[in-house]
Amino acid sequence: MIIYSGTKDGFIDDLCNGILEEKIGSAMEERFGRHAPQSEVRSWSNSLTYMGMVLENSTVPNDAGIAIEYNIPYTSKRVDFIMSGYNAEGHNSAVIVELKQWEHADSVPGKDGVVRTYINGGEHETTHPSYQAWSYATAIGDFNADVQDLDVKLQPCACLHNYIERTP
Image: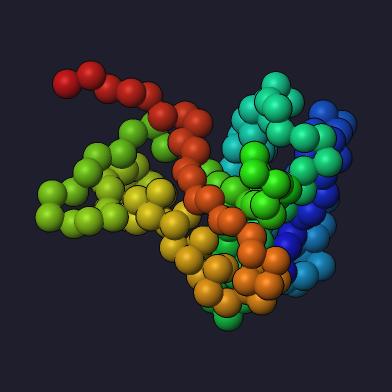
């Protein structure tokens, strides 16, 4: 299930016209029967505004597909942002983007795919966002018939748009 879908042009228009959050919130209520928590709405506002700025000044075609909050079937996992279209070789392609507002993340010695960052009111260990995006791509590739039948190339990535690089 997808909470929001459209084209790059439509996404940017909805963002610029101030109706993107409303559309996402309404779809969330319609599909899940609940209001999105204010923290989630704030997260959409911050992260999706950033993605809009990136896309507006990119070479991504205006008719590229945009999907927000894709619920991977048979799981509780939701992909933050997906761009779809064709890659440079002309193959069906989708970029899976895990969006984080983190300002920092530190590796955790001895724990692959785990970082330590400030979430939920304190410093906690959590899944590395790149690993999270990779696991989403793997699940979609394994269980989505359209992705398999159309040979869609899935490219996972993470975007930490508030990240502050620290020098040692």
